[in-house]
Length: 531
Image (cartoon, rainbow, N blue to C red; front, side, top):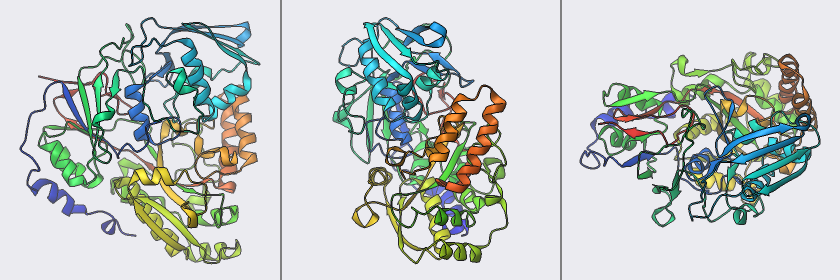
């Protein structure tokens, strides 16, 4: 499929430059930040979904016991510090003084214990933690004690990781809710509070600075660690699905920050001296096509394997980010290129010559007989829409019967949670991406989990992948981990929990007067407006 048919190309750039302003250019009040998120905030509870927009919302209103620094190492955040005793089997975490929820209640250790347990029920590393835990208790209001069956060296990495779901701390009364039941109330202790009364679904989300938040007194803000000092009284998220309108709003000064400017409009933004463009996450974004493995035809590994031969990663990447090869990589497997666990194991499945006639023969041999597949696509999320359109073309050329259902991303997020067949409101396939940091290794890589109905959306059952993950967690050193990771990738090409579609590097754009934007996620502490 040609890129011309997926995006508006030159026309979109011209439109951004020539459209009349949607409102008179204005200078934003110094204490209000206006942000264009990647999509609408459809789900408020960061434990029941892996949607990044929900994670970004959660980092504003909740806090974490630990964060990661610029070297991806865990650092105390809500925690004052910790001790590890009894040969690694007794861990004591002490909370900082002065931590408050937005309703004025103190953050207590029992809130943290309940929050850890709720998060752990949904998270891969958290589940490992639970199986190794003999006891997790609040020994006083500021002290959490964890007694382990054996040492768990990744404990602090698990509590600090930004990969979804994140271990956010919430009141015990909320954290006691079943982990599969979405919370309706937002009550955190983070630097901003959620203003529910001003939320307009599909249009606006509002946050106000929490005046009683106490940042860490020391360190430097980096990624999700360090002091979370806020310089805006109010942050407004404005959902603007039309890319040309978003570009105009940023250039005119109506908006301060656009999270994900589309590839078509990046050149015109780069030429605007009032706009700063940068790549915030050096780990990139890993695109993927996820199958529903509970129902035909993708319940058959032979069908999934046949489609590996149909994937042309450069088609997907150029549709998303354009033809500048410095902004994407193809020949990408199940781990981010250049990271310790990446390898060439099994890569011939993606790098050998593409032969669609062979794919059709392999699908027929696997038992595919024209059954309809339902592809759910996000119409208001440009990068995901581009992936879905190329994917639709790929499936069609492979001879599959595709029902292409295009809705807003919020609807996709809700529908992909359904385990029903597509004929009863479920789905067959969808497209998404994960940050590279969320796929660094088998411990954090949710899309490689094979725990059936307890796994991430798509629900693959892959006992060998699970066995290898266990071996990786017990590997004594980097060389041993890398050896197991090669086996993991080889097995992934046999099981095909998803189709890897490449890696791309997404720029963010903000007004030149905005300073302090951190690397990694869109985070709103440390950000301020210059004179």
